Amino acid sequence: MTAWTCATCGEAHSGLTMVFGPTAPDPWWLATDAEQADGELNADMCVLPGIDGTRHYFVRGHIEIPVLDDGVGTFVWSVWVSLSQASMSKQVAHWDDPARARLEPMFAWVCTRLPYEPTTSPMAARLHTREPGVVPWIELHPELDHPLVTEQLSGITMHRVAEINAELRDRR
Image (cartoon, rainbow, N blue to C red):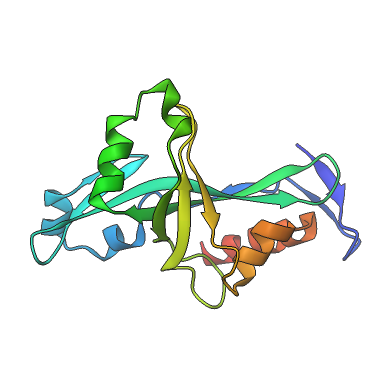
């Protein structure tokens, strides 16, 4: 377990979670039992029926936030984004293709509420597909005026990671 002393509060911390995220997109949790039965959910993709007979498509990806403290790496929000039918078809067609990392980024909407104000769902983003077995990464639009965008662009400290951990532990 990594132990460290926070330069901001001076307290020792250990065992912080560096990845947080739900097992399904927010619309899945809001769907009726019948809609879920007609839908599909696995660890990486989700399909839900729409009211008008259309389908809604979701893919899990990572919002990666650099941690500024030396040697720490990256904090990750594992979130779900919605894709158009055409983008989802492209994802499925290339799911096992080693060249899928070269696909053009796809427009997406974040469909996971994270502990930020204002809300993170919906938030415009781009899904960057990586090689098979590696979760796609989510690029938030840099022009959005949102604290999560600022964190993705500028990074966070381990003190902020500790704050996130404490906040999410309090919700359980």
